[in-house]
Amino acid sequence: VRTRVTQAESTEVNITDSPAEIDVRSGPQSPGTIDSGETAVSGFDVYVDEDADSGDYQLDVTAEYDNVTVTEYEQNSDGELIAVEESRQNVTENFTLTVTVEPEPAFEIETTESDAQVGESGEFAVELTNTGGERAEDVTVTAESTDQDITFGSGGGASDRALAEWDAGETKE
Image 1 (cartoon, rainbow, N blue to C red):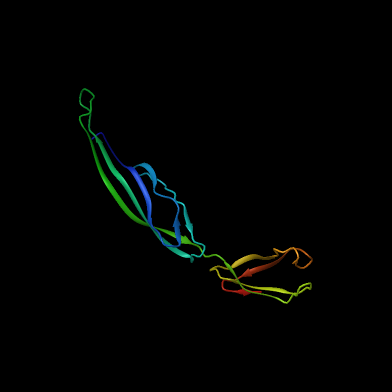
Image 2: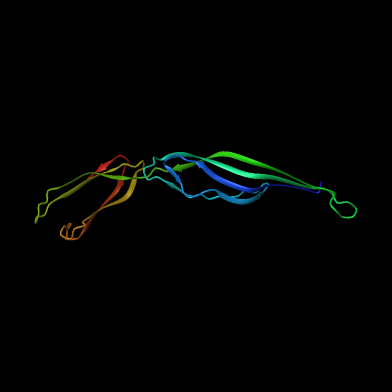
């Protein structure tokens, strides 16, 4: 035997199923011919729903290719190949990929309250909860008016408050 080469030709990789929280926004990928022992990378555009819980999500993937083996035999005395054989078999492989959604902070307004009357000054309070699955650090909360007649503090259209740390599930005013 002179040479034996095995390769995957006409390779196509596709995400065939994903949970509702994962939106696959690209179709099948064709990485081309892959020689034995080589690795090919196929990229997919995926979008994780903003309401997805943190954790692991499974995506079903199918790879389809032609498994091609070419065998060239010794040359004869005239330098010609005695024989060349090629075997081709269509192969489909199914496997699962895991997408991990990391926990992160998320915030929700619980209540707002103000004792200010038209033409007067007053207090404005907001109660927020970290509804995410992760502690937040170096948080700045900004209240901004969409009405130029409503101002904060020294007459500006916005007011900031810095909060050093905010645990998951914690509510602050």
